[in-house]
Length: 332
Picture 1: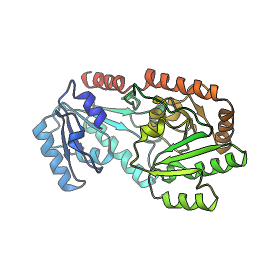
Picture 2: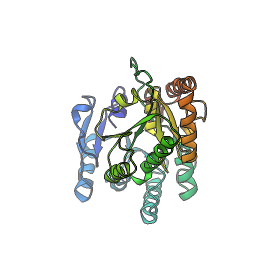
Picture 3: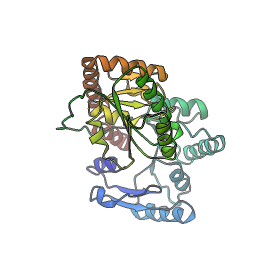
Picture 4: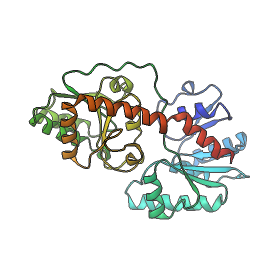
């Protein structure tokens, strides 16, 4: 949100209204961007209506279903263009997904001719169109982007293979797979260390399992508030073990710092990684283990793929280019 609004503020007057999230500070945004918190529910609905009436926008762009629900009943819709970005493949909960599909279709009807879906990956587009018929003929695909880091210094490769995991410690991210990968690498005699950056309800269970299997001397948990770029610069590979990813922003971030990414071939990760060229797609735990063993014994290939990964981010996932694509949509 902060990166996007800062880029767009160069050519537009921006108002940001957020419904969820802690620690969002207006000081972190471009000084020309007004940032407002609106609660979920009836009071939030009225507040959003007041903001829309005051700001009188030409474009409304939402990123969260509760925002779509609120804005569906705008008292003043005028000729506002309405964009809905779909970030995920659904929650897998039948009732919730059914409600979401109906809300999106009501928006299509209310803003007929003025509404467009933005999907962050081909996988999200395919899922939404095949599951609910949403967005057919009225969509754009704009991948997430990152600011390309410059002037960074990677820490030299050490004797141990440095493995990194970054993500929420929840079922969807499959962090227990990382522990199993470690157990098998240890059995193969590979020298390595693992850093897990993230927090979540599985943290304590993961730590207990680490201790029970004697992996605690190999795995470090650094929490969810760590400065992630520092860990990218001190890692050789990133593991993305998720069972579902709408896109895979962590993979792109790591690649921009010349970290070799190994990921399951799910969701939007197929839009990011070309197996063997700028990273690796590993269909299961065995695939992760075998690839890590190969890369540990072949540092030249590891370095080459890592360099290619950064180039691919510069060519395909530069945030500035993504904002230019979004600006073109707004102006169309």
